[in-house]
Image (cartoon, rainbow, N blue to C red; front, side):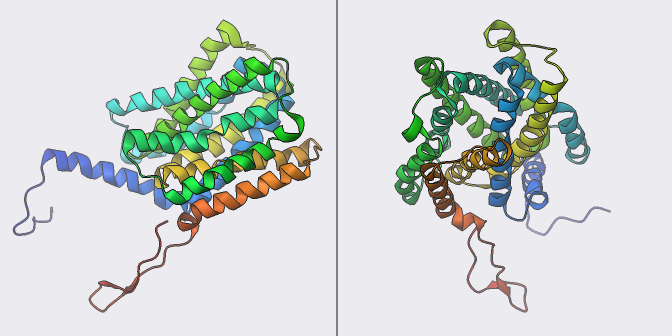
Length: 341
């Protein structure tokens, strides 16, 4: 039997009834992800970092790599999205646009960045694409009017210096087949990467993250297929060895890494999420040393330290656990409130 409305309360309007499920949808992922979304973002970034090493082992064309890392991830993502759809229903039709735009931006980011690695070297391409740490907060500021803390702006030079040192650019410079074209491709990849991250975070504010993310990856697969056919190289039968490495990329990056980022980023400030994603080049350096036997230089290790320190300083307020307020006998909160997660 429905509970009677409180005396003096206005009846719920259709707009209120539509807004209430949206609010509950947006709140649910926070309780299922990790206790603190900053840690979820960090784990996601480290999982994504494996893609650089795995793609190097695959040794295939940008179109082939981008297409298969999306297609091979779709079955697992669909399985993960089914329970969410049964519980909460499908996303509103009007919100598919952001997911499609994010998927297209993600596809071009993968294509351009993979192309830039061969043309300008892995170090400089990694440095240029991680300019997102500045571009994403600027997009959030310009479009969503999200404030950017002054403390973050003060840390930006230290962050960029850490990225440059980690990429090994100071010691080796550009080392590829076509440095000019590679620099252009890496800059364009950075723009696409920033747009993808901004749209992924913005779309997640409405909840239903898994279903939206399936649309993002499906769109990225279609765009990668078309672009690969045109000019970025596409081999639909690359062989079992290449497919094995691309399957590893799909699982570590698309299924685990980016899904964690998509779930955690809407619960974090734009500048905090952008800084935590800088753990990706740090993880790539560590994994390259373990898997490929690469020896990071002292400057690269110093760059990793700078990134870790700046990431902690930018995200410390969102990493610290929330203190539960003391409650009195009447159930009201008393005592100081903790910092926001």
